[in-house]
Length: 269
Image: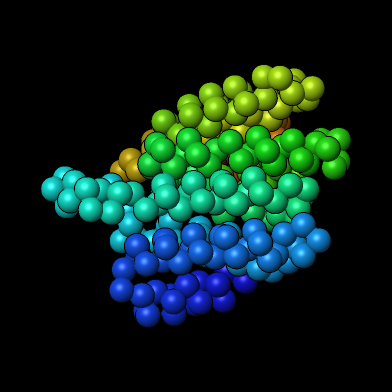
């Protein structure tokens, strides 16, 4: 699905003179979707394509202003603004229009929206992170819990942060925004638990990523790996992720020629 939509996006881009044309077109499409594909005329495929194309747009390398030189970034912002934020605002607005149809995109859109929030743009993050509160609320209404939301967040965070996305500022913002959003919810306590779990996972993933940047295998690398795999095992009960990091720990010991590596009171394997 993503590949087909990505191909459509790049085909569209090849006929567009600038990204500003795409923004204008998306605004036109947004209006068309609200008028023709909502309520009793709701069309999942149309809305799904709309969201995916919007996510692909935001993640375009040539729109990542943080990689620009200060002078180029200044000129771009003065001329066009940050088009990622414009698109993020449009995604949020369209999401709010869906009503109960939001359930069709939970948990499928958690990964794509999470990737958008990991873009290091404060305004974009502030706009998009509240969608996770909305997803929690709708999933709670449907299932009496938000286990699907939690599971998808955990799975996607591991893969996205291993790609270098996310930072400590994001972890703090994710925590503060969602805690504030759930203050008056009847499911507040379980929401606090989910948010705490996800932010603790982010902390360990960030520590692990930083440790892996170090040159030689040392105690810090091994310690970060053990902390993460134990978290997956004891707090999340994610056996497949636990095993994944067991293998990574084994590789670390092998590189260090520590063939009898242990942690705690047990052997490596």
